[in-house]
Length: 415
Image (cartoon, rainbow, N blue to C red; front, side):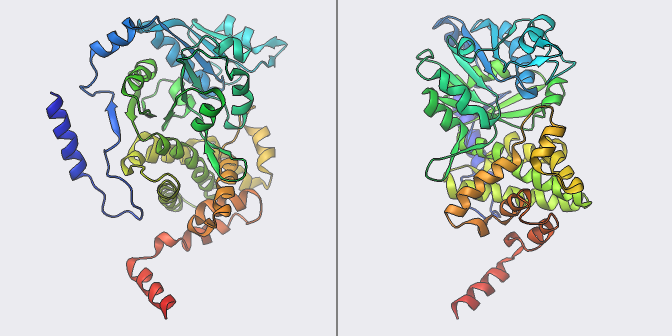
């Protein structure tokens, strides 16, 4: 069986090389460890994981709409596998709702009435307002907080976690490095709390996941056994998991797609149609691929065709909060900050902030012109460029130059 699997993977890799892409990435299919239906899944692996250690305690750090949707899945799944402890702790930033503490409401009604109203959480999900109390004895930490708050949440945990704790980040965005550049959130978490961190990204709008509407997701993890453990913890019949080893590309896709979705919202606000939005999505995908080629060499092209890539990009450009707020930004003339407060019920917008972080890195390396869509979106968010400038950007995008144009330009420049 193992020989058949290896031969099939080798054939798939040979037959699925993409010849018409503007950047040089590894072949499609090279990064998959396994998918939900892979014959590599065996009972013996799960049993070995279970017998070698006591049940693993799970803690979810974050309780927004996405964190609560994941808590609904994880709370149900831990009761199905002996390898997990049945109680799931969820760190909740304490707020007062109609005179009552949000943690008390969640623990008595089993509903996050602020961020995921109308959806019942399993009774074994326990809301905890103190992050250290929630996380100190956990074997698995699931990070689902706005990326702006990662340092604030992680710093109290430094040196206080169990020695073999592992983490998985569902956070989309970057952090600015001191002295320049950007840092992946998974790398930041690892630096802050000294644990290995995998990532989960995909076309996963929280409301639809909570409604149990079918979708796919991608986990980036280099350790096969830990990847299988995450699969067991998170996969359901409506939430299907593929695990790949291209961790950085999975995470970069999750961050950059929010920039492109912001641009799609500008297009909607300007009154253009689906053809124009499709152009933004295509050019955005090309810049995402190029960004990985430049800053994370070795990324695999196939990763961009997993749920974390093109699927997440499409769904966010049509249904996400970044698109919705960006459309209102064009129509109302209000600032991004004003609209975030008015429209998101305490949630945070990621696209404009990620555009700022990416532009910081591009400007430092003199690469703004190589990523004109990312640059234009950032400038529009700051009101340095009027929204109609998006059309000039995509009209004159370098991806529209054919091979003849490029050769002609090279000849002219050499004369």
